[in-house]
Image (cartoon, rainbow, N blue to C red; front, side, top):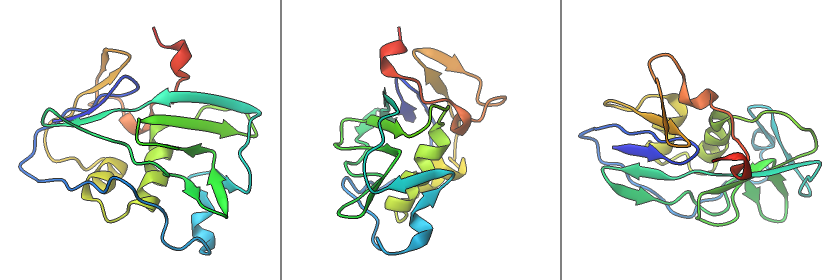
Length: 160
């Protein structure tokens, strides 16, 4: 069972065992391909023209997994507009422009920082083995008609 909550909850059953690396960072901070991921830039300083936070929680087979600290942060180099500072699941969205950002964009960044993790790869690629349920603010989303990766990252202060 996989759950993202309250932003998104994903539940699936699978015989696969997922291994999670709690703290991961990009391994090659000089590689230019890391500097823009799915339209999200890695800036030298944090951007605050548009600044919101959203909470992301994952549960697999009733066990919680932290979102790693440092996703989207390349120390002494740059910070992506979507990033985490700790393993609380709080995603910081700090952009020079106000626009809608999606769970899929965050997953792409997370995958770059944790590309050896099968769970992150499967979430990014929407290739979870088993049934999948998604919830936004306690309301179930029909994953047959809605790709969870397209769900907007909403300011947690706007959640009921």
